[in-house]
Image (tube, rainbow, N blue to C red; front, side, top):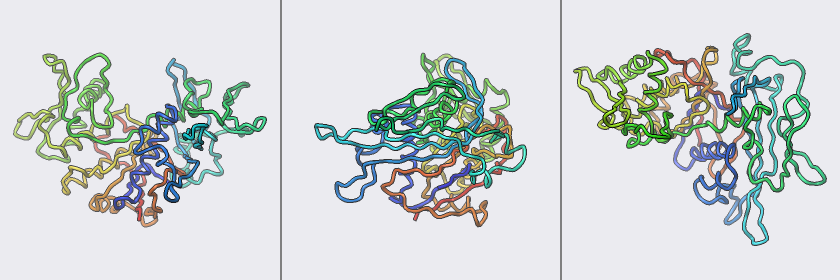
Length: 421
């Protein structure tokens, strides 16, 4: 399954749409947590996440394979920085469940692989990235070939061993694969292993939106440990907008302009440092100059405001997944919703743009209809039923955070509508 900067997955209930996002969420968690905690966060029992063949008959292994386009620069938490030789990476992970002496299933990493995708073998780049210097910006030229993957598994004295060679140097690390209860990738935290660190940071920052109107309405309290990053439920929206405003003095005008294109009666969005109540508060100004706080705005208005803010928030790059974005949105606003979602994705012809990719699940035929107006006939592809599957193949993770003052310009990124039958 190949994804582009903006992908809409449409289908009926129980067709596997949510399973796909669940699989991506699990892979993201495994990039920085151990297996037990990662599986606990998922729906159902751990065994139920493995493919079911029949009653009480579940697969013993689970395999992920994901191809990524990542940023060519990476930094660690200590200020170390590195430039990547390869920005197209393939990561594969095999998880196995085995019963211990008490008959209780335990989870282990059986196989792990991180390798560069060779230029001559990279069909995705040929289809998605413009030729010439633009392509070299996203996938730099390389000389020579790397002989070993960045992470690989091989037999050592009959024991599967996961090896982590150090980029361009002697040395590295080894982990017995039959005893590993977390991925090798999850333990990388410095630029001595730049490609592995970049892959880890990429998957770690994947975000899965489940916007909650109650969280969107609330001001952000100023307190120790307060976050100014929008959470997956929409918390901290006011603090995020305040940060954007301090980083770019024109950002509020640009967000207001985009919001006014959707709601002609709303002229301006504002964010207030409410020192009396020790909080940040979002307000909007209507055409009759009345001011309304976020506490009284409707669910649909809040969801669209949140997407407008995401559009101009440089702290959000990487993969952004959004399930049923049409919830609470009037059908007359679906076109504006579709355009907002599309603009969140990267336009590869614009090399000043950082990377962001959008994947949307929907039941809305109206939303699908709007997307179909943009497609070419060869951009609509079938997808097999994904129910009860937790396997991700050939996911193209191309990313983008929109440049600060997009001024409403619509991205030219290709979109593909996958329909799950």
